[in-house]
Length: 247
Image (cartoon, rainbow, N blue to C red; front, side):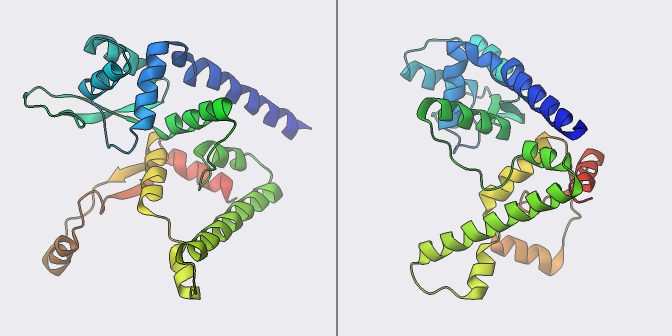
């Protein structure tokens, strides 16, 4: 009974957070337009105020850069977008000036909210390949038996879906080794997970020891960037979560 009460309390807290934090800035028509742009142009690494201003003009919305920055800040405070560490030039428009802008991109939480909004509008939602941080936190709060069942179920579903996807993609014979190899997540999925963990403070980036000699030559030949070799480790918060999930 105590577990059910705590579970109900967590759901109420999540619901309050959804309406009081994530959805609150979207009451503004201008904010919704800006958020829509970040969602639809998610394939671009970042957008600047200049890029967003031009996209708004296509939507017949005329806002100054100061106004746009104010709305962007409200989306940032809600955790739906994030600002890059460095400034840069516009990414979607030719720009010869030396002036640089803040770089903005959607967060995993922003993508989740976009899915929720899309569900209310169309009644459809794309299933996530891996569970969100919120789902992992929910699993961590379960009792030991339920925890194991949910972990095993998620892993089983992932293996089944990925195997069927590989068979469908090749439309022919697939070896057991090929199926095992296909279970390695794609780079975009890994990057999305890493970004989620960083945003939630579950992991932290650490400086990778510099390589030399043959390893450095091989890395350059393969076109491996510094970002590809970036290393991470669990933070205390991340370690506590992992301990709870697998305890």
